[in-house]
Amino acid sequence: MRGYVRVGCVLAGYVFASLPAAAAPRTYDLPEPTAQLRPAPGHEAGLAAAEAHCQSCHAVDYIAMQPPGQGAAFWTSEVTKMRKVYHAPVDEADGKAIAEYLAAAY
Image 1 (cartoon, helix red, strand yellow):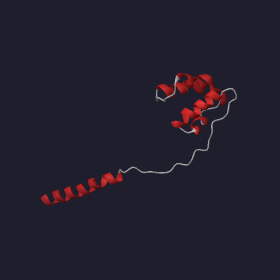
Image 2 (cartoon, helix red, strand yellow):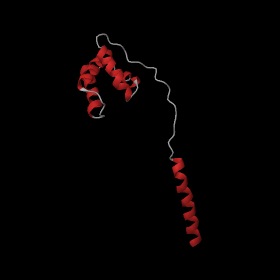
Image 3 (cartoon, one colour):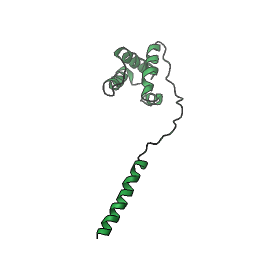
Image 4 (tube, helix red, strand yellow):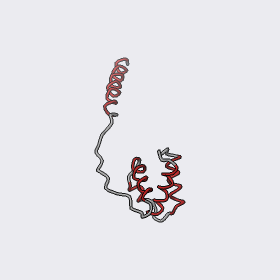
């Protein structure tokens, strides 16, 4: 009986010793993003703020995938959520400019 216990302990040791190798981080290369934010005449400041802030957390495609024509209330809510819930480092003035730009462009 003791022999089975020893064999079991040795096998368990081998299994646990191999776990760090299996848990090693994997690396991969992402393709360069090709999407760009749409221009919106009169909203250049909002476009610049969106380019500076939004793309640091997610791709432009995320913005483009939102339902079109949602309007200012939708985009104000989205930008507020990014700032308050996800703690995006966007000040109030830039957040307002971004929301106005997104409402005009998307």
